[in-house]
Image (tube, rainbow, N blue to C red; front, top):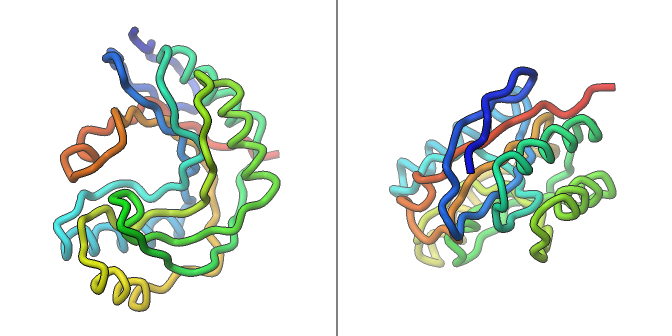
Length: 192
């Protein structure tokens, strides 16, 4: 299916959706928080030969049924939710590629509501919301991950002001998988 180019506050990218593609809906950091996090991602990617990606908090990930449905859902969500600020609880690490190093965030009712609304409007796959902002995707040894978790400092709060839909393929396992991600649309959250 093809997405159509639309006018308005969203950026739209035309894509054909191959079978077995997934879409992830991201909450995007705002202003200075975004710039600071992008700088950390770039520095860590250079040190550990990881991909550069836009820092984000994943709200939902599931199969794509149509680009039009994704675009419509993103506009609806952006109009229904306000920008939000998330408290962080520190820097975490794991052996999962997409959670090599990350900022842990506290859940809150607004975050749960936006995630549930996206899930309800999507193709319906179950998704467990684990709020975090990844800083590094790489296959780094456990000792290096422990050191990095102590070295990198997390801001006390991160402000988010937009939602983005990204075509991600399957579950990424390497740099090339991440480099193949494509943004479908991004909308600013409603300011009331």
